[in-house]
Image: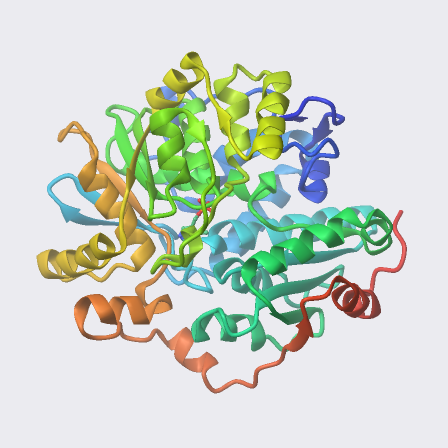
Length: 468
Ligand SMILES: *Cc1c(COP(=O)(O)O)cnc(C)c1O
């Protein structure tokens, strides 16, 4: 499989090069040159198969000849052996035709593990084959940092540096980043906000000399290898509920648009997806764009679902590429308008194309808490605030009651105990994996919000010295 950039001028690359490149050199995102497709018979054959086998069938067309089949299967087996549920992503019924897809059984209790566990192993293998090493740098508002550290700790060809805002992540999230003991892990607490961390990250990547010297690599969801791992559970859940013989719908708590774009990919590959509900909290730029065609960021408001408190969703560019008929020139035009005037407007055809696949609903703070309460009352089941946004959105959109609605549960309720306690009056029970972390020593470095300080820290500690 070859990959092309959404902005059309970067070189085409194969899967492993895209894996290591992250962002394309023209500033665009890599997408497959064509969508692989699965026939109804191939999809039907997924019924009853183990998650890892389905994952192998779904992912291998995207990998092409870059990785031998046996190696890919071994990587997937190992990645999902870290999950605490043998189904990996089980379904739970919460209403007559309503289901929750539990994506939080990985080591850090958020859905980021589903992709990060695979990404780390794919990178490790690619680096070993090329006799190279990299320095992974990431900025996190919470879940991504923990998932990345868990997945990359102890890997010999990779150092991992995670920037997080000091004092602004939850205790659970901080411990997930600071209790790893492996020397290749570096948690950096920045005196600043998440936006400051992201700006520092950008500055590191924009310093081309530093970038090349340290072989910097990124792990956020613009990395195609992360997205591709997320396509899998759309297939397993839909097939469990009767696809391809009947359609299903999904409601997806959305921030950076990675997860819901994976659902779009599943649809392009032939899965009968009747609708994808883009569920947002009050930071509703995507809901507004889908409804009105105008993409215009406003300030970010802090909510109970912090992993969705985002203004600019980087993966949305991948969808723009598709709804413009893969017109890289048009994507560049929209992105320039965004930079020049902080907004862009889709034309009639592009808007229609969006609305054909996506529905959207915005869920405010009160509705989020009310949903946590209502689900607990109706079926004795606790959801986290992100998943609650998904459930509330699913209840708001117009839908065919005969089509199963699957809401993606993106985090375990114990990861957000304060919001859950506020909704229900009691914090959720603490899983053993979190309780154990309470007693471990924490290790992190506090640095000022200064590019020079961060660059020096990473430069001194990264084991990579020069690149091939
Ligand atoms: C990252 C995250 C999301 C948002 O997913 P995107 O792929 O960025 O849209 C939703 N919920 C939780 C718990 C997350 O960690």
